[in-house]
Amino acid sequence: MRRCEYGPSEGFPALREWIAGEMQQRGVQCAATDVLVTNGSQQVLDLVGKLFLNPGDVVLTENPTYLAAIQAFQTLEAKFVPVPTDEHGLVPSALPELIAKHRPKFLYTIPNFQNPTGVTLIAERRRELARIAAEHGLVIVEDDPYGKTSIRG
Image (cartoon, rainbow, N blue to C red; front, side, top):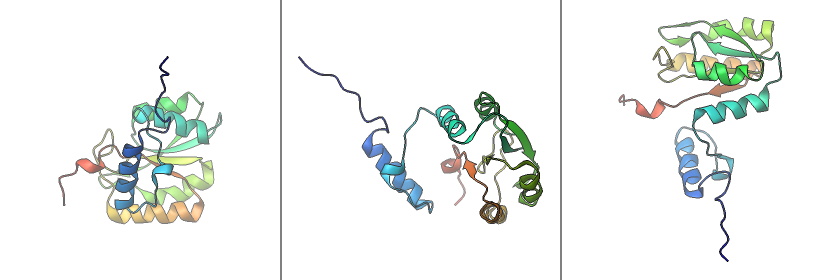
């Protein structure tokens, strides 16, 4: 009798190695053992919500933001507070006041070709966002489905 087995639940090992390599090229310290392969963004958003959120917790989002993320986090009864955006993306200077007032669990952001606006967060603002997040202990959940599609050098 032949036994049927599923592959590893974390995902195909060679794919996890490749993803870890891609993340290292982006400056993220990452090993294949840190990678979990999922079935698209909805599964990841659901898992992130389940890890971080309790009913009534606040999520900071760009304004506007990806509707499916809102839907994933709403099932966990999260509250949403928009962060102002403009033609250069999310406005980091608005964050300290929002963090102090709402004590969010995390900031959900799409910095590359933001959905639905298509705006890309400029480098100066990325640095400012990272500085503010570190200073305030703010977790950033970065959704980057389009980052590798840029034709810019």
